[in-house]
Image 1: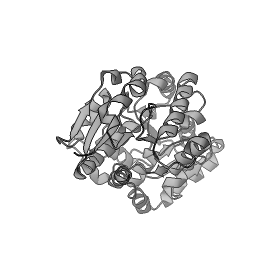
Image 2: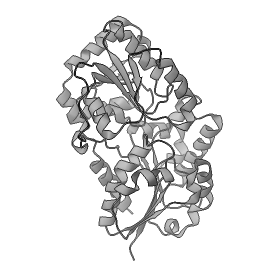
Image 3: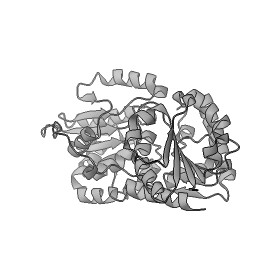
Image 4: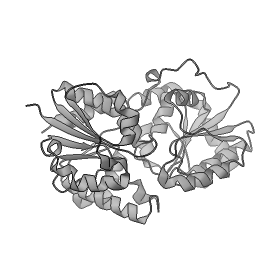
Length: 374
């Protein structure tokens, strides 16, 4: 009888961050696992099912399960702790791969949680006290119960080793970097065209989370530069999660005071590709990131990136080719102008080369390697 691998792919709300990770990785990984003559049970939430299931290979050895309790995040905790561990496709699986926010029940002996970051422990009140406390306890238990752990950067590995030294002592913690969507993987539709060549703008991509993503600071940087270069504009792209909805709405009201700032919401891959290619630079000022898709996606289009000098994961990914600025410098016209002038000296082909190292094909092969090990 074929061995089974069970994969849990759940997220709630907009297809941001972890949702993109699942959508890009799983079609490739599942096809590779099936090619090794395994059976797969894929446990999904409504959001993954509605947005991404159609991308998966059609195969009799792939079973998709959509539990009723995964329709709401609050009920999913009960499901993962008290129902999932006793299901036959968990008990008989070689491994159970948790694609995000692993809540590993006591009886699951073969779990591999993927941990994307511990940034809510760094950012005060990011999720609120109770949710942060619950997540901290669940990660602690997941690490303790896991047979092996995967993280998406060395920075996240360092976060885990600092926060949970006992739980990861003598445990395998494997770094597998995410991939990114490269230019050749985006097919422009007939109605997609380059932005107005006369328009000069900065781009900000990601969840509209004003405090975690340092969006007020980004506006400060933009407005400081605009004092010297009045034609510059700023464009925001990204969805809004429920937990930061109130902060996001306040921020959107704040930026309406500047006619040169626009919020485009959640855009297609085709639209995003065009926006990256035509931007003067991407602004990416968050201090804590587990990986940071916007930096490498920008690089892949030859687009320079202005980053927070205190963000450690950027050093890991950018090979020092990002343009770093301190938060204390954002209002200093001379420093800001000097930093941004560096954009014109960036070797864009070198940026593209760096980004080319981060492919989903490579990531899928790395995950496959872990799943094939005993």
